[in-house]
Length: 391
Image (cartoon, rainbow, N blue to C red; front, side):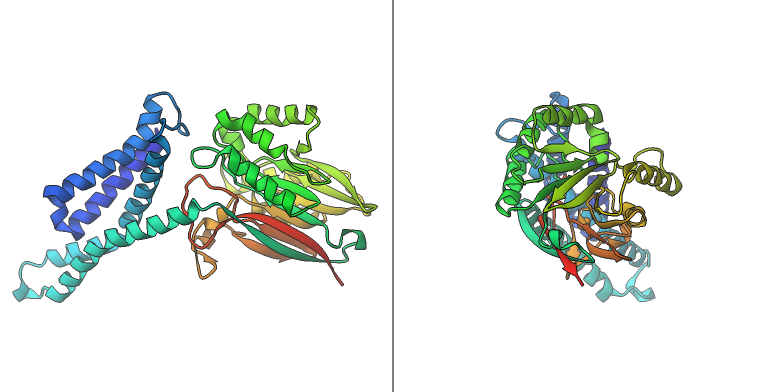
């Protein structure tokens, strides 16, 4: 019901902004069209819920197009509301002046009216472009990571990373299978999945079967994200356990490590749980510290340590305990960037790409999927990371 409330609130906010900026929307066909399209966006979520299909369920034939429309409309309405309210306030203040004789700037009012009429077109165009980009699949991102003192045996070691796939309304099992096949074709030595794999538990069995198509020599190591905890941690953990019992190449790490041997060199891959619990920065830091104490236990000096974490804020804890490379997700890179700079970079200390701290490096993926099919400047990615010795 929370999602429905947000949709109704955004539609109402957009309508109130447009009433001020574009007065003709209050009457006639424009008003009817806006209300009708808003109602359709509400139905895209309310109807599957009413029919017992859940948040990620879709009606036969029309379900996916309806949900795509609902998402696109919500993004456009949100842009109208966020970008339009300052203009609406300005126009409202101008309108409070009684008459031109006492100082109304008719030219400014005309400009604000023109901008107000253009705003819906700008919002619709931006939403459409982002929806097309967000629904266009993933790209292969090759990243070379130079590590000082890397043993010769690991020079050229390749890791394939997927993260934040969010199997559900807009991402299906075949998409997961395609990402694993992309890593197979890249001939990586190890595949990793760094959390937020699935939102729709009805697709859990098929998703696990897709992961099990991994053909990397060292298999696939996975960790948990916040969405696994939210959607159903117990069935998801059992699905990973059942996969391991079948002898599949997929293993889940929860505050634990897997030691690999590659060309005679030991590699310890540490996987930490998502720091979920009561809110507050202090509580999150304490949960990360506890995970670090448990997960890195037993590390020896002759091992190269890699760390998998869903939340990139774990990076300092990983470096403190000797991790040379940390792989993370969670942020989706903000899903919007201008000239390569994430628009919402203020939201996280580590938003997208590469970071360095002492001898440790962090790579934050822009995400392999999405829960909302809208991306501009931050394409979905399957990351292929190649380790190189930096003398």
